[in-house]
Length: 338
Image (cartoon, rainbow, N blue to C red):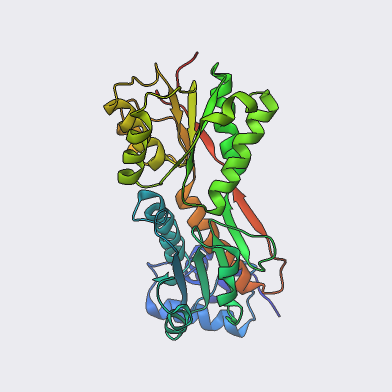
């Protein structure tokens, strides 16, 4: 028979707060009291899940970064902040976190086998650079998996990702509302699912405003790295091309590379051209001018993935779901009011 935490506390002569701290594995309770409460809870069939507790025992999670080409998934603040969110949520739930990398240039099956040999309760896959076919390598893995930062039709895993379509749509809508009529796209030359969805959002906003035809000639593929992106934009600007009123960049790295190239080529921002990015990385505040962008709750992305993995372990029969986190416009000085 189940027993409430309040009744358990009354029988043991301790406060309900003490019982709650023990069942949630919080510090500050003596070893003797902790053991007494856990033993009594077990004897009374206390329903830990109903109380919002994961488990008193410690679980181990494996975070896997899938590296295909590395042009997007670099050591940037975006991924470090997502990892920070994962780490904090694991600590709050008494879970050990191990981090591994899978490189497509190496034997993938062997890499996965080595990762699983250490034992873990669940897997988080940072799938930013993954393609749909890459998930076949996990077909025989029989522990819960949650996919971060990507999702494909037909894969049977819970996914936690950014609402890329809506974010790009809102960014372009902001440029249109600011009075710009021709809006180019600084499109990532590294094809990943996120950027494809952002392209859909870009086109949707333009189409709705009747601005697609005049803007479509201002689409440029840019490598999403600071060095290569900058050199490519410098080469493009060397010919003194016609420019749109504004650009939407697939991420802040591309936007930053373009802004430096514009500056070094003698252009003034946002007077000559406005730019908006995506991600809201720390560099946005220190750029000249500060970069308008779409904020992504990066730590929230990581924390939500851990919560979903815990829920999957608790309730393995529950429906597979896709969780999208919306973005938010952050207005700075790189977009002028036309």
